[in-house]
Image (cartoon, rainbow, N blue to C red; front, side, top):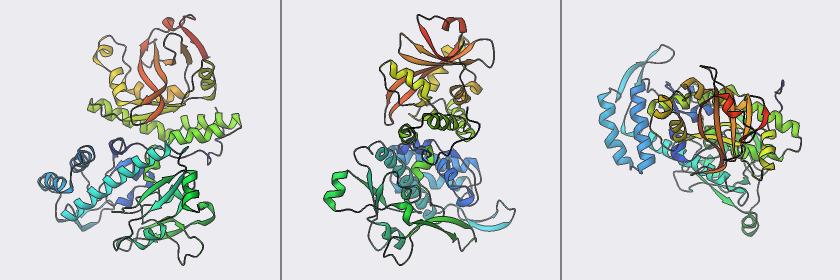
Length: 436
């Protein structure tokens, strides 16, 4: 394990997903102002300003989720949600005590607020899904163009960005991938090398023109540092709206596939090893996974969602390649596979992991007792001690598994407790690293 984390600026990004999975992955965050959350936390947590009760957020979130899944129109969204929020008392102007303990008048639910909630959440989710799809195709279309809707309603700073072209991994997209504000209608178009040449496009090098400035929200005095872009010939710099100087698609999940692409390109093996270990040891990633497990086990209803559990080490990946397979090195778990592992059969025969053991799967993958090769199934087995008895926790990982809507990953297909002696069969299991 690395004692000093390496400089991972070349590799770090936070993972994105498809639109519905993106929204459903959000944890609840109850805040007074929308800017009470840091930008990456805002992307990870579904929040509505001044919705200080979980029952209110639950109603709003459920209706937005339905709109994403079923294509609900705003008229139906408003019709369905308005009476439920009115029944909960979250409607009209009210005197509310804010998070600082001050009493103030605030606008709760209203048709205008519902319109903003509807448009913002659907646009953010769809653009996050678009970002993931574009990242999966960067080998063919690595050049991205910012596209604004050029009409009278387009904000001047958004209009200024129209036509800006940069490579998918240019730092420009870390701060300017849309949406770049409430009700933003901007999008991104992808091009191949041939497209860029045929259209006579001139990509920018964002590092040369990016800067930062402070913006102030007049009504509250809230200040925040935001990114700026000023190209040659521009009289003033363009910047995202206050609170939107981040990439919603990348901030939600971190693009682990793109991250592995960049790590794999690093020639220094020791640096690759340190980078992977640092990612796997990330406390924030482990905590986010634990929260996801808790939500899935409580709901007991698979939605097709998936989470990254860890990154396969270089040593294990090399062994897999020696068997003629090319691992993705991104190990994921779907909610369906989690519930399959925790099914009643495993519960009844005592082989199911405890909720705490499911939550700790990232730690098990980061520091397993042993990693085995399953000769018959051509799978990996990550093995760790059981937290409740003297048995072992066995985690089976299928390699280069095409997960629907998520691309190729290495997928955890089962996890349960076994007697360690059952794994000490060299004809069935070969030890890659560690010992039983």
